[in-house]
Image (cartoon, rainbow, N blue to C red; front, top):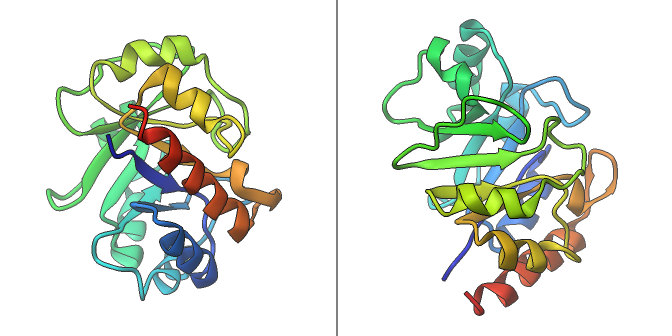
Length: 199
């Protein structure tokens, strides 16, 4: 089984190049309140040399439709990732994938029959893991991207327990808050590729 890997919270072209070299399938840019927040223009410049087979993900949380449309126009993402309830009020064109986020401890879980969804803790980018046993129940129902506190030293255990469709990492590949470490990115992906052979 091949696991989908997304690295989130990237900020510049060097980070993107390192993520691509590590072998990820998606790169995420944060447009919500965060120390990793970037502008649509910064994200567009960072991804100008991105291979076509790597998805560009706009990561938001409770955006106004005007905020989303500014990101759509300025960044031209392949994917919008935001809390599941947000999609009810946003104008998302058909060519943009929707990745709803379901948060541990939240209500209204309606795992989609098809498409990707993200499972993480109450606060994105906090480095806190979720309850993997609980997450496994949702992973069995669809294409889950497991997020929350993943790093090189625990991703194998997380994958064995949850058996997600893919994994999403941000703070676990940083040397300082908000600063990606290219070696840690490579080591994280290597750890994922090692465990996927067991699935």
